[in-house]
Amino acid sequence: MSQDPIHLGRVTCDTCTVRHRAVCGALTDAELTDLNRIGRIRKFKAGDIILADEEPTTFFANIMSGVVKLEKTSADGRQQIVGLVFASDFLGRAFSKSNPYFAQAATDVEACTFPQAAFEVLLRQHPGLEHRLFENTLNELDSAREWMFVLGRKSAQEKVASFLHLIAKRQPLVGCAHDPEANAHAARFELPLTRADIADFLGLTIETVSRQLSHLKRQGTIQLVSGREVVVPDLRLLESKAQGNDEAVA
Amino acid sequence: MSQDPIHLGRVTCDTCTVRHRAVCGALTDAELTDLNRIGRIRKFKAGDIILADEEPTTFFANIMSGVVKLEKTSADGRQQIVGLVFASDFLGRAFSKSNPYFAQAATDVEACTFPQAAFEVLLRQHPGLEHRLFENTLNELDSAREWMFVLGRKSAQEKVASFLHLIAKRQPLVGCAHDPEANAHAARFELPLTRADIADFLGLTIETVSRQLSHLKRQGTIQLVSGREVVVPDLRLLESKAQGNDEAVA
DNA sequence: CGACATGTTGAACCTCATCAACCGACGTGG
DNA sequence: CCACGTCGGTTGATGAGGTTCAACATGTCG
Image: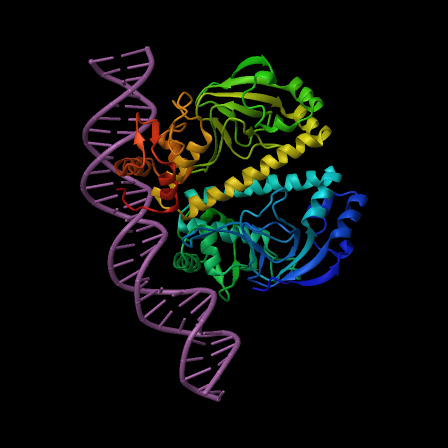
């Protein structure tokens, strides 16, 4: 739970693996140079609080690797993850005194961070940067609303399948790069969240998540290599489970 | 379900009741004049589809009165309202070929509409306008995430209380203007949604919504004047029910 | 008046939460 | 080194909360 992440010094966009996908992607040279000047790379360990609820925002960040949970907590201890921030996503709530939720590292995280004040000045100076961040926010809003459907209308089974499908889309796949013959409909990845986190993301309990994973495994929709590593033989089948098709597999 | 709303002609911002709260609120004279030029006031009837799912966006709008539902529908007919748009709110998804959900009038609606292309040109020309809309979108995102907590973690009773509290905050109160002695903690308003809509907003069934309303009524937390008109004697009590305090009332 | 939409209430059922036991991995200290 | 506690995860038994099915009430419009 260290609040004091490792500072790794200045940014070098040339070698950045998420540069073209992140908000920096469509900037002019001038914009990028200015952004570059205020950026610092930091590392966080799984469990670190990156931004605290109701605390003043001190910095923003582009996530370079790892996954960050955005989490809401109520007075009586209930928790709900209201968003996941993946590599190339932007972290932080611009133009607000304080943060509306916790941002906690779900895995080890590498981030390119920008001090709050300097970044907001830059936003004002470069409409192109602000526009890019705006588009980003619109996409986040679309995703949040899609997830509202999952939370409000899907069964436990569909929720878990939806979650796995989301991770398959957003997380790096393992053991595929070397195999050009790989089945385009298969996937193999590491779950970035614990069962408790998955439950908090889906509005379920740990036990229900565990049971539904076992169920999907028994059906053959997924294989659980190690509790954290998942193999999906056919993503289309998984997606159809996420939509509510629960027929047994041949 | 008319797709052909009444056109009421040019915009006159001087008399607009939501002008200072809407995105037009913080514009320069030049910006407002340009916006004025492309705006048209339209009326929609309850039930009208204002923007259709996956159809090209043809216009945006500031809602002047009434309530619009943003609704997602799945292939098997399940529905989830993913947002409510009230008077002074902005309606529409900028910078996207198509709309990610249905926008349907929940009540009769008056809106100040802007053609898609012309409005996006204006956004590019006036960073101030784009900035205002950006702030607006950030607030929408915060609200959406707050609602994710409601959907994922609250009981039926808490959900219904949360909904009533939201409406009490956002909808015009009735029969209060003339009474300066009115209890600041009381409220009286018309529900802009049917039971079916409320159910779709809360991820519940019609029956559960009805039962929970009856329950709140029996407790004395609310009074149901007419099925659609609600009196809340003490908003603080309602809010505490929304947070999960279910003790009986004295 | 009858037809239809909207809303309420009751009874039975089912999904998922709760409580509890158990497992394996890991780290620590005697 | 092993005993021990802790943490993350799985599985089982039980029950509550919410859905489903059904009947009925109310209101509105032709």
